[in-house]
Length: 590
Image (cartoon, rainbow, N blue to C red):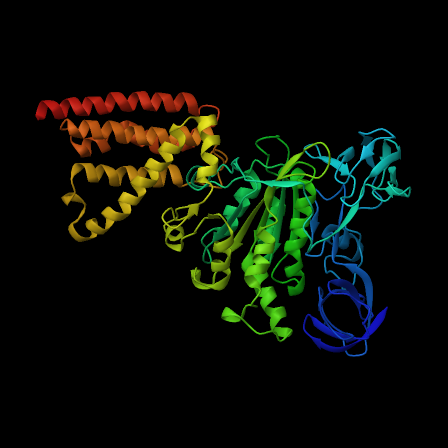
């Protein structure tokens, strides 16, 4: 069915003669067959957002509807891929038309020619339901791609055979309950704006280990949780998200660059293949899917890129994997919504954003979770969503930040003043929070003992006391404080500089395991406890600050991972002797 263009306004095209089309249908516009999606229908007139540049398009151009909603193709070959916002593989487009992408280019999302080694895991005659795994494909050395029955099918496997197939060839035949034979291939299609189904959602109870001390110890996120990283320009949002993508203990990472600068995606493409995953020893790209819709690419496709990314992530979650979706940044995505809303002449909400901004953000974050997957084998998978927020001027009272804060359970507030002091990650420990602390406490207690969370609470208390004492210091000076308060300030400085501060660009300090984090914080707090005892016996507080072990604690985070246990124990032993010596001198002087 076809219609005619009557109006072109940037990425918005209005066409008439489409009375049989439906909302969300994908259409092809004009002689170049530009990809678009129907946003609204009024009579036979449809408002279409076009995912490509519309210059040169005019009234009278033909619009053809495909009769299907905006969908992604899911199957082997997605890992290590880099797609644009509507799942067109950029590398394949470069091979076909060169580095400057021409409009209307049609390339299949998954390579239809490449052969994959399929191993059947069920036999003919097996009863299957939607979500059941019928075979596997070793997609990369670290990802075993599970071929599943589409969610809406169930019946009996009539025939299935292991072998070498491409994604369009029939690998099995399913006889449905009403006697129809349905051919099954290794690929599925799924509409991006519809969440993939699951059996049951569970409360997230396991933490996501990112190797970043301020995140893992102070403000942890659970697998299946939601988090936001808000911060002004230059405060390190992208580096925090890169660190999460690099080191998180998940099976698959889907990194969505929606509206950020192109050179940031270039950094990812250059770094990830060279970096080794600490869990598998393989390149990080072997478990990563990249969606690139940077600030210079079509604005409408930026809006679709978030849904494309999270649908791909849900597909891998359905296999029983732990998946992380990292969106950089949801503010640019919201700006794309605002632009399209303005062109549709909708009533603007706060700061010009559409009135439905909060519900759209919620639709994205609500697709995260720890779930029991479809199928009869009770697989568990998780999808963790982390979105960056780029508020103009760092103003967290603007609509995107406020709507995000109401939805997510972890808030890592980046602070420009910390970034200017070169304290990275520049996460402000007084403004950030995690609502998963209570649900994660049993896991930490079981795996690292109750002392881990107790030390975390003690460290947060010391940082809070430092903030209160700093107000007094500005009035009367540091020397006027009592020895106990001077010790509080010194220990808070140790927590900040020796524990929370971390260098993303060194191999040793870029990633820190839970055990190492716990031992380092325990050592700092042990120093505090011994010093308090020594002060009560009359020790000179300045001498306690000058002991050689104090400097060694400061350098403890630079100790190679394989040596830290022995070195930390050695420092702790030296520290006890040196503080006891200073305390003995204080007792004699007293």
